[in-house]
Image (cartoon, rainbow, N blue to C red; front, side, top):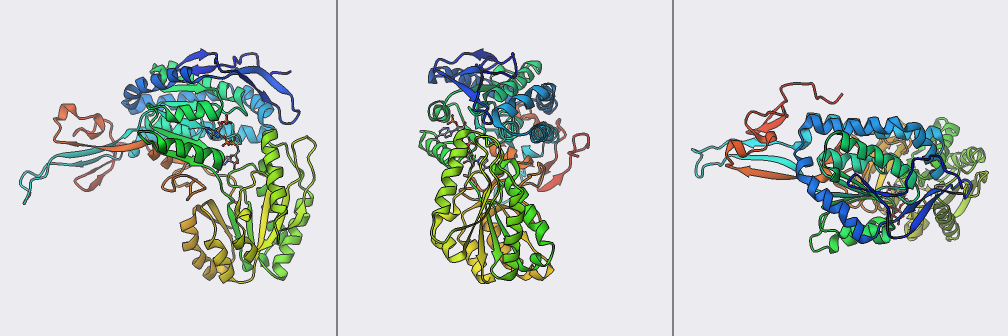
Length: 539
Ligand code: NAP
């Protein structure tokens, strides 16, 4: 047995306290070697879980009322604490996930950048959505009362991270960052595929809570199986919302649990997407080899274990389409399998590939090479046609990993018919030249109803974290198409509006006070009033 660090305890962190679980143990596995990593992680039982949720509820009022400077400083402190252990984090995450250091370093920078972006959101305060309507006592036929509106945090949020982003979609990833930025305490269900990484990040958050003098219930990290502890967390009456990134089965199970509670709560689950790419005829008059290399690179990066990997590609039937497929075959010949995140995920990938390959009317375009480790299967591209795609739902199922399906279309009408049959997706990509604009114009309204992000002449992997990003989309891409889990808009998921009617001025909270002490941009009597200072502007 090896360990990358001597500092890990293997315990849950309940409101700042390291607590051994009473419900058995588990160990991380290095997917490249099959070796177990220390320490053993002790799993909580349901009675212990209540300590975290009770503390989160207790922390809600003071954390939700934090002034913007202190609140933003807390998020920045988490980022700095993560950076302080960056070397140890990347080493441990590499051992637990098989992901290369370069990818993990980039992901860590994205995670700390995301926390700092949310700090700037908190300072600027647009998300508080303040509206003021002064009283109009002389209005006829009825006087208008004094009405003021702002958004308040929902309360404690349960967050479930994904296996494939041990930093950016895990312990202090996008869901945690946006919930904390909204003023919601977080109880994070640790991912059992990277428990040591989770503990190191969990400590960085816990230390920031203490250093900023916040109530310790602002953050807890709980180890335990999803089926027991995860479910119990979502059933807990003190939890007010759920953030989840992972499988369709896991997300829909949590949606059902949340809906069946005596008091149902929202679940923001990001689940399953095959991210269609539509190659139009004009795009194939350009550099077809480069196009094919781009496709294969996007498909095989991180072993295809990205929620935005291109699992489906439409190409015109005929000579140009065949030339593209031949180029894909050449590009794939240079691609070797990379270690997948867990033996279980590699096993599911093999099952998915076998199932797709066994469907009538589905053939193999090409396979890459097996990687050098046990769980590094050869990437594969399948092919079929629109009638088969429309008739068989198996062709739309996500295979998490480096497998993709190319569908030949014989006419723009056939292409449109296939796109209309697609499930909801995170992204859709168009490869096009100017001559293709009329077809693209016909596709766009269909795609807008199906996906959260539409790209032209690029590849869907690589999600920018910013103001205008949407990483969302209709079911099954997510459980709620009205929002995003990446980018600043993600904060809206954990807020709700409250109106104050005719409240005495000294009882009003700062965002809606007449003097605007937090210098927020507000809508006053129908007019947008920009903040008086620009210090907190988002760069
Ligand atoms: P996962 O198996 O769904 O697990 C995610 C988290 O949810 C884990 O902590 C897991 O705990 C918990 N969980 C799973 N099922 C649960 C249930 N029924 N009740 C309560 N908690 C439950 O996802 P993963 O580990 O990331 O596995 C990869 C899968 O995620 C792939 O299928 C991939 O398609 C999907 N994925 C999608 C996206 C996206 O953005 N659309 C991104 C990343 C991954 P336990 O492990 O302890 O059960």
